[in-house]
Length: 574
Image (cartoon, rainbow, N blue to C red):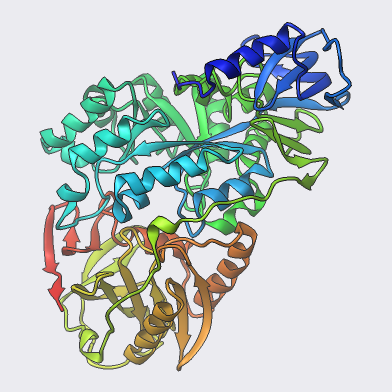
């Protein structure tokens, strides 16, 4: 159970409100609301004192003179939406994502800590988490067990001591996501001990098992996995439920599977909606223009699922799975006053949003726009320069893009001693240590035909990716990215075509999500008009290094064959 946050004197105040000795701060009258335990719509008055629901029933306070009264007649109220699988550094940061998400009713987040693990000491990360907890949202976290790539110093970064410190926090609810599960299959007892540690500390473990067979699902369940969000067909949903997994259906920028998953479940007449959750799985900013959890609920409603089941998949089911119904997912006494006021149950985007008793949105107007800063990351300043000597691409092994994120090895046959033609889709690819100590040079096929220079400080590890047809433009793009202290830059014939600054650590922006979306659109357009034809360029950058996907990756150790677990071409020291 998630630990409550109220002190003894606060709890005494709450009881005094019920006793009529203290007035509530807010009462929602004539409230038609979803009671998740009875699975029905009820009508009552909802008493709120600051951030907590104090009473739900027929009565009104004795003295309403100092009480904010809001008549909710004609409206429908549901619990605030929960996003159970957030990657909060997809160009945005946790605070500006929460500000954006809150306007459409998503106010509780279970988030990835990978960026913190790779960039900060634990005490620095925890200082940020504590500041986030003071915002009118609910932030929870998961603790990574591995880097999702191949790093020379991985055991130092992901030490047992650091992982234990994270798992010991009340706001850390799970371990994972378990991208390094193949290590478990190969017999890595060190990784297995981390899963067992999480279980002993009463934390869930989220797996990452795309395309896995029932046998693999059974193996991982025995090793400690509780849930998975990688089902791509209704049959895969069924397989996971058979093995006792908590199943989260995904609707993301690279895997928008939710519509066909729900349609398949309905067609199979599986009575399992009480056991399903939903996620947008850390989508890139532009994808969220259409909504977040409210969009997921709308998709489920459009598939003919009963409204209560649809809302539970974004609230109560998640809260129950993570044992947090004492605070979230139910409109009842003692819970956070986190509520979405809707036009009706068929319109999940709220007209008003209340989170921890504070109005984020009221009658369509934004009421809260606060954020935090991240001084722990320091200024993003690269203390090295590249020279033309770094752009040496004589390599027999290249990387071929199959789609946005899947890459295969291929034999490089073209001449790599000058500028490449824009009549084919092979480009130079350079991965550089953010401290300038090493580099990996290769050729990438399938990225684009006419991108001459592109640099990104955004990557899985925070190291620098440079891609292009022309070494001079690639160098220019790197220098522009360095000068603006992190971000993404497209250069052509010496001119900057598009850029997206990432002011915090070179990995995420401090701007509002609406601003990031517009800059992302221009960046995507610049890449697309120059031959990038895959779905999501931002995810391509993120996953170029990620060894949880087949078949070959560029990593800090070099070009790495995922299936054979070996380095094909080592990194070069500079």
